[in-house]
Image (tube, rainbow, N blue to C red; front, side, top):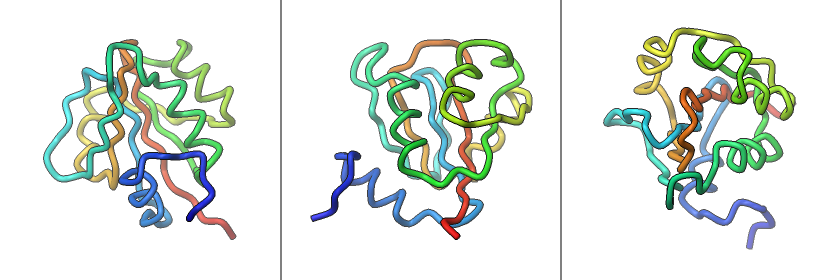
Amino acid sequence: MLKSEILNAPLLGALAKCGHTDTVVIADCGLPIPQGPMVVDLAFIQGLLSFKQVLEVLARNMVIERSTLAAEAKDGPVQDLCSANGLDPQFITHEELKAELPKAKIIIRTGEATPYANVILHCGVVF
């Protein structure tokens, strides 16, 4: 039995398989998700689970080398949440962010309904 605050078994297993430079995406409920990456759908109703809830847990449980947000989220609540969790995001356009999705190892769909509440987390290493 693992001791982890993450209870979702498919998510926990997928995170364990991530390596350096793999990407994990936290997505709002409206982001178009491509075929290919593993999708962990944590959306229940609008607002649950929230971007904030998922980001806070992942920030505590992952080694995150860097993060990427859509430029449209700059200086808004999504950037503030990233900064509050120790991330200093890089910015690309929303269209460029969507183009990166097929490369993701995992896409975590939340119930978040805030515009541009999507982040690409780039995995680091523990040493």
